[in-house]
Image 1 (cartoon, helix red, strand yellow):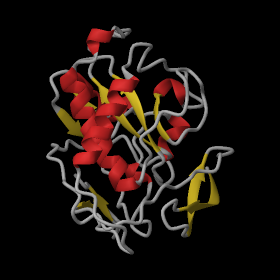
Image 2: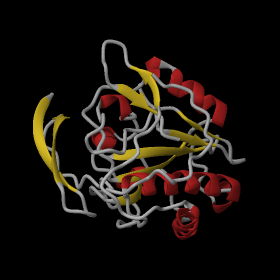
Image 3: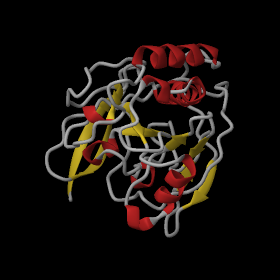
Image 4: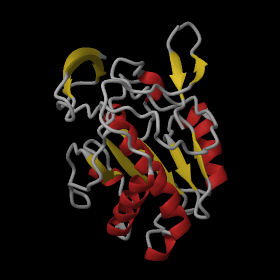
Length: 251
């Protein structure tokens, strides 16, 4: 591991902050989309939390986008898989075909001066773990990439989660890359877009246009207070052993 000091500029107010980032080799500069707004009126979502131990290995998560995945097992099986330390894999959220959803890794404090360390990096896309949130979608078997596999219940449940994170962290609601075009992106992308990964999810039939429309719909329904100088921090979920910095579960 090496330590690299990186600067992030808020697109809302232009404030520049510096963070020490642990890296494996060279890292492309990140945009650090901290949204300097008063989020006190942002509608919270009711999402159950089941902790995954598969995190903490990388540097701080500075969110610049959301990666869409699909599971290779059923919803309950994916939860158990992410809770197994031997699997060495996790995601921030898993969404079932019937719309059920669960959070498995905490979200960082939205305040740019709040805690953002390895406790918030899910192990879902290798070098992209320090850049992206991950949402897994239940398929149940490898290669289930037909249009009918993406149910409305699953898409709406996932899109609401994405809208919440876009509002909380200032992530733009856009898909800048074509499928299987690998590059660091800001906004939304598939596992197939993240450099250094050889996965093909979410497959050729993921309904990107429909999904982004639903994210925009849910984003429009979330109370968005006027720009302000402060952010409302998440509610402390727990304090990590040996550390005074709390983990945050902001939903």
